Image (cartoon, rainbow, N blue to C red):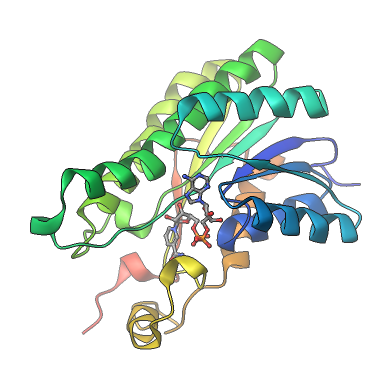
Length: 251
Ligand code: NAD
């Protein structure tokens, strides 16, 4: 038994990387988790792994860039588990292009998936918590690139900066209802989103104080803490999990 026993938490992007590790750690601490992802097979595999370890999880296929789908996910969760205590708005993509090639489609795709999805999760999630009289927690995945600009990342920089501010603004609006909103800002995490270019990965790794990519479970453990009672005085902040990335300049 742990303090997350009986809590029902949705993890978007739960089929891979940071989301997948978070699902594993939340369920190991007793939470029931909905693994919401575009990648249905991946989500089912994560659920099977959780169940093999006696945890409780269910998969749900979704495109988080569509508001009506996020609303339906939250309704479905309450129908399945009877309540809803938290959402980790984590699904995201990258699409790197020089600014002069950042056509409207490339710009909007990343804004839709990385930014608007967080608004949908916060909006429909908070409304449901208020309706159920649940004092829940919302955790959003931002990035070091929500603070630091990077070449080729105009769309991603804009989306993640918005996520940082939405966590603050949402926290302020929702504190009155006992709902907390916080964020994490990962450095470079060793997940499929980085692709397979080893040279590029080595270059990214060098930008951390320990000179290596961060493991997704290290972000997951911070997210699990943010969902816990121990983090009840953290509100509106986005916690860097960046091995010092934002604190020093690589020569
Ligand atoms: P990942 O590619 O391993 O996982 C992302 C998951 O999101 C995948 O399972 C994918 O299917 C899902 N997804 C993508 N678009 C979706 C959509 N429209 N609807 C539903 N699901 C969708 O990547 P990750 O590194 O675990 O990324 C998780 C989050 O962390 C993202 O928001 C990403 O921007 C952020 N982040 C990652 C890094 C990094 O270096 N890996 C750094 C900073 C921030």
